[in-house]
Amino acid sequence: MPKPVRAHDRSARVQLMRILAVATMVFVIGGTLNWSPPERHPNAPSSTVDRVKYSTQSTEASVMNTRAVCLVGAPRSLPLVVPHLLRYLVDHWSADLFVVISNQDRVSQEIMKPFGERVLVSIVGVDSEVLDMNLVTETAHLPIFRTLLHYKMHPTENWPYRFAAQWATRKRCYELVMEAQALRGQNYSTFVRMRTDTRLFANTSDEFQQHSSGGAVIPAGEDYGTIPGLNDRMMVGGPEAFYLDAHICDQLLASGKACDPGNAHLTGCHKGSFVPHFGRKHKQQLWVMETLTKELYAWSRVQVQRSDLDYCILSPGGSCKYPGELLQHFEKWGKMALFRYGETAALCGPVGKVPSGRPLNNPQTQAMAARDPGFLRLQALCYATHSCRGQHTCIAASPSLFLPTDGVPKHHR
Image (cartoon, rainbow, N blue to C red; front, side, top):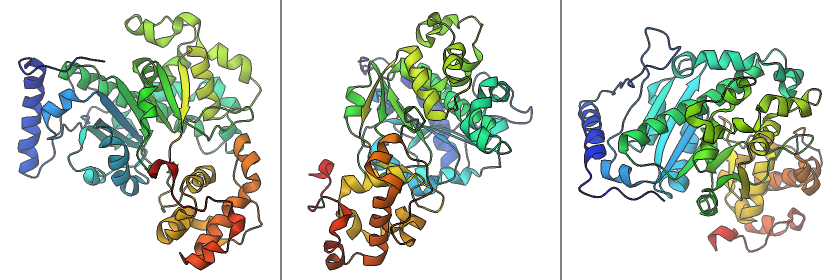
């Protein structure tokens, strides 16, 4: 555990205070601080300066924080999830928050308003402004994408680019965290990477922190793939896991190249290149993001543990995108979820408007298919939510829902 910065150790604090003081002045007069890093990001257009905002958050508190949260992705569902991300993760863990929002279309800076002053560093812009586009382009043209399931099913939807851009966004946030870490003069001990469309329903378990120092902690469930992969929605870990999670593009491109000497102890290059390792298994076999995630951790030998997380990936319309996550939420809350009619009906979305008995046409993990084939049970739960509209007698008369009767989730007892 890093030692706290003592009161008389002022060098890092004074340096950060100067930047924050400028941010405060600009904020007061109603402007937005555009701060350019010491070295401008490679491959950004010559007319573009990376927009990095240092918030007016207490400098002393920032120096003392030992956890960094990287929120990365597109702006899709951001306004719907921000209050819950702050309450159940960032504030619950007293973490420093870093946000990188990258999109193929122009993004307004207004998207950051729900965060208030809780963000330490943020970058918002189109892909060409935010990301290393050489890295994205080179990665998207790798031969391994020929056996990507998404590409095989939808060859015109540019899935290789979308995957590469997602991984490059993680790396951009990693760079911001490292810059802030160097500036404040104290290392973070725990790192979190999470998608911008993640809706949390309860406090993130302390198990994620307790087991993260020696490896990575991944939410349980959602391990898609013909051979079950590894959930890629969120990662909590120490420095080695954080580096690995942020440098997928680099690992894929490193075949036959020398290791980065500055990070040789983290990259695992001494174990051999990852691409041949992955290619031997998936030259012909189709793969998905979860497949690659599992193989990457196995190759690097970064230890992985699993922990329950009450969450779902939220669509822009406010419903849970993946039925498996919604079913896990139901199982945690029991019939209490049915009494909260308005919220639960919104999370079910179109699933609850179709009479039960018809299997959903959604992919299932092997574990979820064994628990609820075709999501018929989930469909019954959502349909009961819509039809009962929170009425206790109606819900009580639905014994086929297979939910706990006390209605109190275990993490709220």
